[in-house]
Image (cartoon, rainbow, N blue to C red; front, side, top):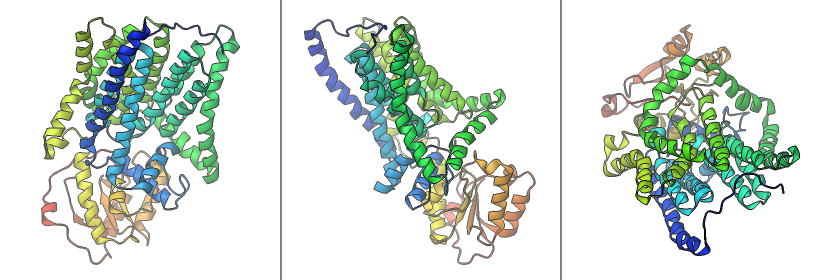
Length: 519
């Protein structure tokens, strides 16, 4: 192996000091995993958000024999859908998806703790794990949900940890593992490349001066990355590689470029930043101290700043700035914050900074644990929309059979999953080919044909989607309104439908509920 040119420093000065500090640190480290689980338990019963509902629906169709990408449209890679497929096959209950997010959150807690431990010592590792155990829940940024950002965070942070383990121990297998994990993160979300970039940067920076000495470690990372990427491409060949490329690569790239105007990006960021600020302002403040600290040590500067910068680039590539995008920034911020907090010689300062970093989310968690009803759901962005979806789904199940199809216009696939029904229209999200002329033509054809859905739920005004008003005209001609669950949502049934049960009187009087489009 090439000689390592980056700085190395023993974390402990003596064997006795190492023994004295590591035993209680290991207990505290295990305690952070328990805390991470307990902090997420209150969210096991809050339902799912629009994205989760869509992923669960696609996974269910996949599990029932539909071919991913060929029979079911989705612009996310196989890794994330595989997690949902496994959970569906094991249980399928909504709490199971939330439990999956809990387990991943515990895993990320331990991995970011391990990164800080390897860089600065056991108590810095405990600090990082403690901060993520709490801040990682991030109710306002949906840190407790099973989104692509959280699913990618575990293998991405794992790639960083493996790269650091190679730098400290010299075993090349760690670099291969870093590549495997870093590429796995990309299969959870296309923008989950931050861990792979950080691992590659450390591999290059730690090589010797000759070019080959730097290229060899990077080659090992690339070799590891080829394994999951290759598996994904093989699967794509078994379905339809052209459709896979169009949906997962070309559509996402074109969609992100379409949303690249400064005005549009600023509007999206302005809309979600207050929610992110509520969870992350203190963490970011302490992480700034960490930035100053790591700037003085080359190894930490290379791996941590590259990690954070790559995550920040990925965060901005999406363009829409949905609240869950901020989840990707949390792991590198947590490690920076832990290094910043532990940089001072006074223990009370370190404890105070750690408490500051987790205080905003900690206060929210205490509030959630001690309240019920609307006060309990106040910090959950999709709480109102999920409650409405539950009521509509119950009524849909009562008035349809499994052979009937339904349609939710245009981005509420949670309804399909809750009602146990399907739609024949392939595009179940707003930001999809639905917005193209061919997609709108296909929608009008479905809603006017003989096999049109028995029930259509309008979550969005059809005139907003089709300025020609032909879509609205078709709905008026083919459907009649039977229910307005809340302001802005209308439930329609086919004019030739029989045996429709009126909705409950109490349901008709409900007030408005929030709606969050899928991202």
